[in-house]
Length: 227
Length: 283
Image 1 (tube, each protein chain N blue to C red):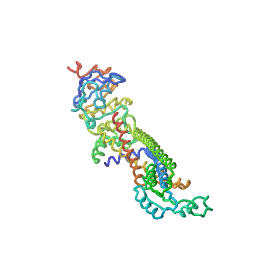
Image 2: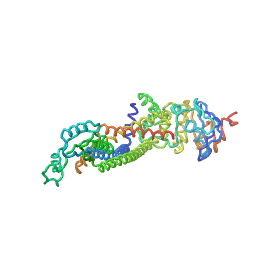
Image 3: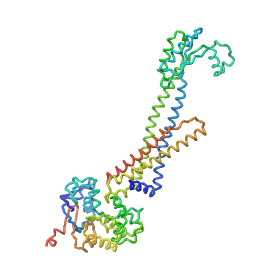
Image 4: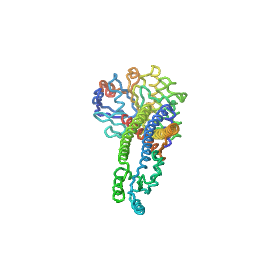
């Protein structure tokens, strides 16, 4: 589903961000990407939704190949991916439901379907009662739930989350993480970058640890996991 | 299409100040250019009026037979350059001089001034070389004493016309370039104000075309509105000049005015397309 083969990424100014990284994420899997800041977690995520092209190696996502993918194919792929960021990236001048509906409208979903699908995901993330609130009227945790609802509304096969709890207090963090677990339990794969080790330890999911652009630990290949 | 219209009109609703600012900037840029165009148009019209007064006068020797003069006038009227030929007798010449020049007011004796054949040329043949060529042909009539057409004055007029033409073209280009740059910057500002929205659109899978279309429509509408506003401002300024300075001014003919608005629309569309394109390439 997601496959990195000998991927390196080098930026003209800041130098090497990834160094010969190879791994696969299977359908329905939950994967933590951990490691210190600058280890390459976000770079891996950006490469996964083809926001960038690797300097070397190949990234394959759902049958698309980074060496040959067109801008149009990237757009089509992103309709089947859910992407969530630390800073939520909501449109401040629109209500929660308008922010979620936005993701359906830009993909040409028939208007009659937009309303029911938006209320379904807002209910799923526990925000049905705040549908008409603007982002600044919501707490950080609630804003992140809106962002997750937006990511979910197109029924993605994978949810890509870059430090989704990075800006949240502990309680909101638990809530958002619980939501991601539920999403995964319903069959959607989740790739989540985080440096919150307590979160990583709290669940028995696959962990890829990065340091200076290299995968230094993959729990799927660790002896206890093999056993 | 419906979605494009809705998105574009929502953009107007969401940021009315920015929209008003872009329309005003477009309007004033086009207005500056239009004002320059009006000045150029009026200078040209004034020069044309002066040019219409270009006239050749062939003075006829005393005692020439009236029939010979009439025959020559007929010949001359057939020259391709000639618009109109008038035969002016000695009496007519004196009457005209008394009318136009005060020093002739106490002269009553015909014969002081020679008779002449006065020739007006068609438009396009009033330049120094055409005038000179007609004048030379007039010299070939044996009874023509002298031919006058204000040679120095005519050369000066044409030099002025050429200078006005070249300066007008250069200034016009400069004004147009400034207008395009200012309008381009304004449109770019409108695109940057929505950079976040564009990047989210890309993230959730909108195609480039989908993102671009409302901006193109928005650019078109702003361009047309700016163009119409500029036209209105130009028309108002012309009326003020007419009214308070008492100039006999000319306004753009309708086709040229429509072209101005169309130019506004084109700059709006091309500017928006370029600004969004530039932005999208970085996403």
